[in-house]
Image (cartoon, rainbow, N blue to C red; front, side):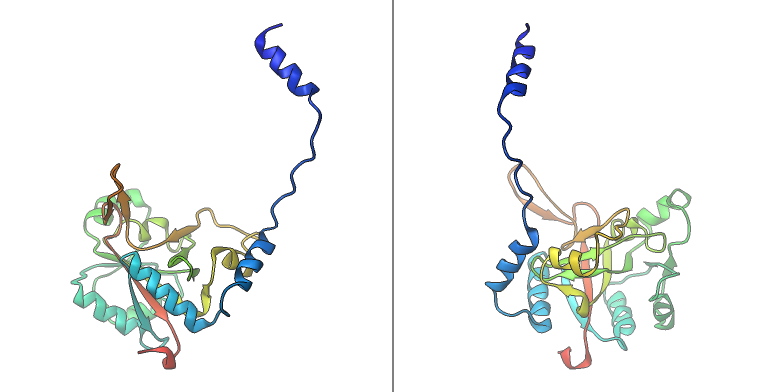
Length: 225
């Protein structure tokens, strides 16, 4: 008998233990939540902004009536000459109506305009699925209307986030949004602009992908500064 066969025989003859119970994830998060102050919308917004600032991202509070104009002003201030957007999204009409110059619809396969997309597109605008206050993170679900490259390629990424879809934790977002019922091909968690670290653990921002992330946080009128 070979050494391999001997080992396998001993493993098969060993007494069978009791399979470990799966972790009770809901109970874990419920206990953790109970140990913290009561969660409020205002507290989630403040924590999200704090965490986003830590990750070198910018948060601008906007309202349902003024966010297109605020975006136009930001594009002017940052010298954005071309803004990539999804022409079949809920926000498309508002973008066009705001008179933002250089609007560029993502309307063809990437191979048809790769050079223009990678070299001649200053910024992009995308919607979001929600946000996570605990970590300062955007939840983005790319689809045919807003492909993955929109939040990956242009140097500046503008993202619209509804404050009503800010969650304390990723687990809370997954449960309340019913992720177990239907997941996209690609779910993205974005915290700040692109970053990388070398072997000396030196964090560098903008090394690949967007150099700036600007979140338009959609709030009520009374929540604006």
